Image (tube, rainbow, N blue to C red; front, side, top):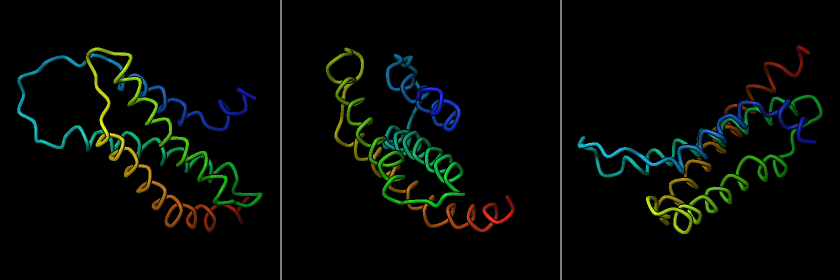
Length: 135
């Protein structure tokens, strides 16, 4: 079962590992000016990227037998949102150099929702039109 997911979702698993690393490494203290919402933009991009790649691999792997939105929604949207909530709790309660924030969870969720819309309304039709009839 584990090898199935490694074979079918290799890029998603690599991005998941990168998100875990970025969520728990201790960032260096830099005296570089930042704009106020840089952290939220990073959260949006990390989880939007994770969800987007999950959707792409899901759509690609299921292009022949038909794509069910509910099944993809669970794996590519709901699971990343729940995962991000767990990460925020772990940051708050298991580290002394990170903190969990509701706004981070909101940015994560917004990234996942954005990626879901892009995947379902743009990428799914493109994969269906371009690749399902040629194979």
